[in-house]
Length: 75
Image (cartoon, rainbow, N blue to C red):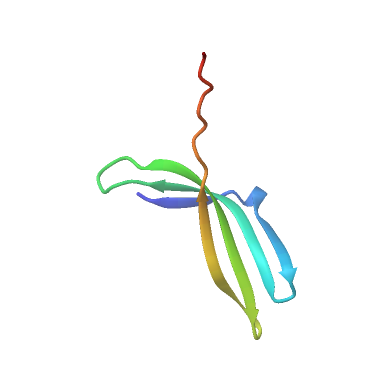
């Protein structure tokens, strides 16, 4: 089963202008092929919202994958 789990304790909205805002929230995507166990993947979700009239509209969505930490290599 696929699901999304936002981390609302790190949810942020920045008002760039009176009619433009940026939304930031880390999200865990749990995804996988049908019949296979789902794997968790962390993304930083960024959205740009613009106000058109009296309504806010999503102008862009940019999910940025967080790479897995690579352990340091001994030399």
